[in-house]
Amino acid sequence: MLRYPPLSAENYIRNRADFAQAMQPGGMALFSSNDVYPTSADGTLPFRQDSNMLHLTGVDQEETVLLLFPQAHNPADREILFVTETNEEIAIWEGAKLTKAEATAQTGVKQVQWISMLERTVQRLVTECSSCYLHQNEHTRAKVVVETREARFNSWFTKTYPHIRIERSAPLLHRLRSVKSQEEIERMRHACGITRDGFQRVMQFVKPGVTEFEVEAEYLHEFVRKGSRGFAYTPIVASGANACVLHYIENSAVCNDGDVLLMDVGAEYGNYASDMTRCLPVSGRFTDRQRKVYDAVLSVMRDAMKLLRPGVSLQEYHKQVGELMTAQLLGLGLIDKHDVAKQNPAWPAYKKYFMHGTSHFIGLDVHDVGLWHEPIRPGHVFTVEPGIYILEESLGIRLENDIVIGEDGFDDLMGDIPLDAEAIEDAMNS
Image (cartoon, rainbow, N blue to C red; front, side, top):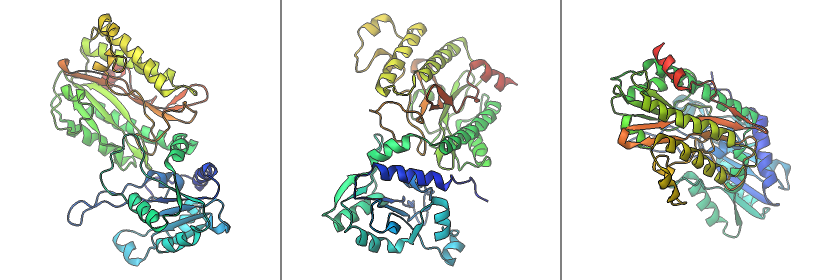
């Protein structure tokens, strides 16, 4: 029994056709799977497939290469998938890998070869192509300090064929991957549903004296039992002043009476991410001050959702959200009109209490790829996550949902997850 059903072969056929359409005439493209990364002794990290390989084929195993050559002379050479040759020993120790027939059924690629044929096939086809598209991680937040399988592959290709002009596949994929198909959206909706179930479990669990890691464990239990492999990213479970550390991941403190517990968590499902943030009063009731800050963040969140529309500039959107937050911080007495009047436009006054962005692309990666300098398009999926962090009050509030941009309006994938303060308190005290 599979943990999750694969997307349709038609989804991957369409994705490859879209990429082929964006390529220059005569171009060939090569994509490599991720490595299995070692830890110590004979240990390895859990395998996580390269997101582009998932987007183009759905193949979720190591030692896989995809070759696209839309204008190859022989039609059989226009799409070739190279996979590990399975055998009885692999089947016994690791579980059987894809057969050629299974790979074709899953991906729609008719020409499947064993990975041992890769170098010979590339050598044969490189004489036909005018350029080769290679991929590397060009995410704006990427910090790559290890040599990836992708980097080794690119190095081998450029040294072996120094006369071939190299093109970048990343800009094409950033545009194509950012617009989600209906199948992808439904997969993300399912991930959000699992996240909802985890949150409902936690609302019944949190009380003074529990630890942050116990809360994390409640989420993980619910996620895995619902078919997820776990968290889509390292979870943040931060009580009291810990919530003012934006990337707090120790999750080691005790949740005390009077604290607000900020939880930035999301389940993955079928390699697609969800990303939710909710805040719970550990005692079951917000204080008046906590409630005012909570409602201010919620107001910004709901108004920000309405600003995300096709054609909107993300730069302008974030500027408008800053204006919304400025109004709320003035109302809370955290800044005054003098602060606003003398603010540095490069770092406005509101940034003292709201220092991060409001939205990012989400999909196969929690911080998914997309072109930030281009207008918003239907099918883009964004988080919306304003926050206010008041270290001197040991209070951090952030609220976050995932929304799909439509032709007119948006679809909130987390619209059924409690968000209003009253709903939160009622659920905790029911």
